[in-house]
Amino acid sequence: MDFTFNEEQTAVQETVKGIFTGRVTPDRVQGIESSEDRFDRELWTDLARADLLGISVPESHGGGGYGMVELALVLEGQGRAVAPLPLWATLVLGALPIAEFGSEALRDTLLAGVCTGDVVLSAALADVAGDLAVGGPGRPSVNGKVDGDGVVLSGTAFAVPYAHVADRVLVPVALDDGVIVAAVDPKAEGVTMERAVTTNREIHPHLHFDGVAVGGDDLLAGGDPSRGAEVVTWILNRAWTGLCALQVGVTEAAVAQTAEYLNTREQFGRPLSTFQGTMLRAADAAIDTESIRVTLWQAAWRIDNDLDADLAVSVASWFAAEAGQRAVFATQHLHGGMGADISYPIHRYFLWGKQIELLLGPPSGQLARLGSQLAGELRAGRKVTA
Image (cartoon, rainbow, N blue to C red):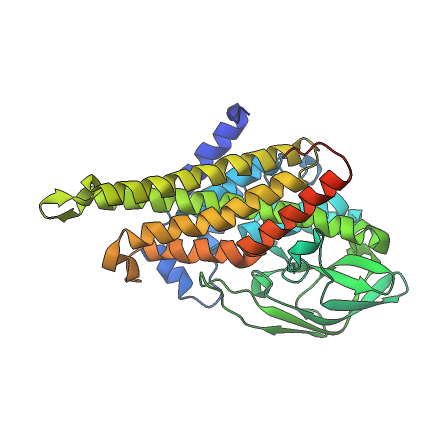
């Protein structure tokens, strides 16, 4: 496949690089990590002014109308800078499914605000992504009872990215006759938020629901429970692809910083980069990075061209989890004692790589999902393509 970017995609890539490079320093990231909400709002505003927050929002709602490839370029830039921002949560978990399945009222309420940086979104996917071996989404941990044209929620949504700053959270809900996805205000009556801090120091609170009422306009796909699995799968495929884009940026930056370190650090009067062991280890990490990159673009390209992307997303997700954690472990290990120093920036890439590896399913789970999908294709007598 030829994944050469067109002029517009190249312009997006250069704009992203221009914003993140120089503005996001290790000292700045450390300062944000020490703040209450761990959200770089000044950088968020810069991204909004550059029209990057609305890059994949439909033009009818003030966005750029671009697809998953362009959005992945933004996330890749964030990964390189390990910038503490709810980009993945807002643009992938929230804005994309609302634009695709939301009511006109919901789209009008939220999407323009996403473009201007005034609205933050998220989704509760930890539970529905957990049982990957079945090949489809798991059962939601939040239950609902139909109430007129709306629904009343009870239960707990675990580890919701940036829910503490979100204006709406998309919550998969189990009904007696299927699944729906509801856009819930985390500040609504009956919602209790429990703070939880993740591996890479982000805040992913647990949301407890006790009789939370959600109106019909806030239900995706018209609140049709027969379409719930379709909607959740649609969201998960894009969520996994977005994580792959983040992982490309994380591993690429980690490898580049490691190469610079090995070229300047000397042992026995020679740069560390001249030793065969360090060269081979760094080369393996670079190869792992490229394997994540090529499978990411295959998945994103298939999504944007309305092709069946399930297998491509599974392959990319497995590489991002398995090869990604291997790459960040190698880069930290090659720094020796400096790799364990939390005042030195390389440790942050290790934390982000591990977070992405496990966020929506570990490598074993991704591999089990891929195996289930392949078995299903073969049983159906279909030609397997990714």
